[in-house]
Image (cartoon, rainbow, N blue to C red; front, side, top):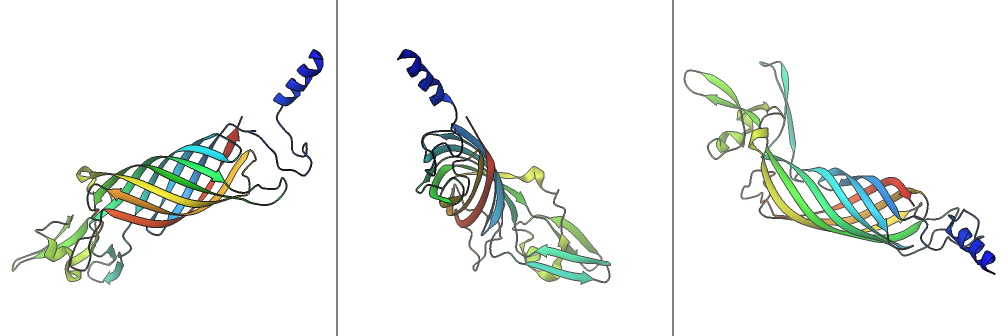
Length: 254
């Protein structure tokens, strides 16, 4: 009796293999954790992320998320012009005041609502996430034309109240400045975020992590984010919502 019980106990510790339960989905916790990378495109930018999750139950995974992203304003528009005298093409974003980059750290939970068949099918669920933002503003430089009765001069400058009459005058803009200008003028803007998404996973209960997410994300910052120069017709905000699509790939482990 003792030998039989011990044999059953040892057998129970072995990982379940595909087909051992016939046509029924696998039950119980087979994997205890997962790591993955993700890439996301959204209505105002893109980002890449890293996830480390703990599989709490057959249907639930709690995870920690880190990401870096770049965002723009949907009102941005680029202007391209050929200047014969300078033998070059001018290309810049009119009215842009800052580049905006974001680091995010968050906790989240993913829950599956359906079971995937062993050989085919997609598990469907949802995920929610909340965490902290570290926004980084880097000035956007333009090459501006300064003229007087004696000379004509071009200067690469960031936006300021003093040069606003040139920065917003397409006749006085030669080109955009170097991306490497302004790194010593960066500003940090803290914030928080939250998001919800629908999850579609063909590999929900397998060793490889594969999923597609579609959702809504909201950032809330400590102050307005001046990606564009604020005018009567263009108002910046400290609330930035967006829709996103995310692909996630990784691996689960025991």
